[in-house]
Image (cartoon, rainbow, N blue to C red; front, side, top):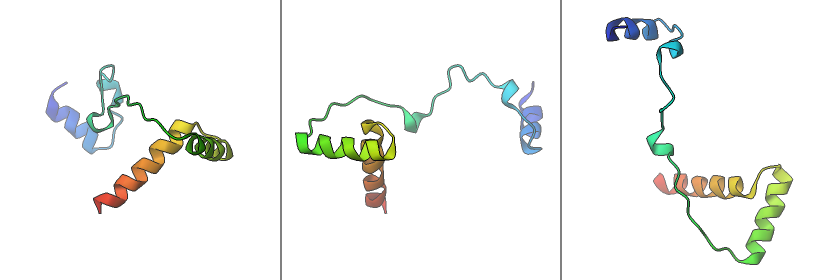
Length: 75
């Protein structure tokens, strides 16, 4: 398919997903890198308590809270 035809389908809000190869797709800003952080025991207990209350893993709480803080700093 030529680019012009593809763009036309996209502009017409047609489903173009069947024309895409997403097997190697990536989100550059969302790429992950593993880091290790040491927390005091009391902080781990507090994180676990909040994670249990919300029904999510501890890692999710940490990611959301750090993201919220970084977003505030961006303003």
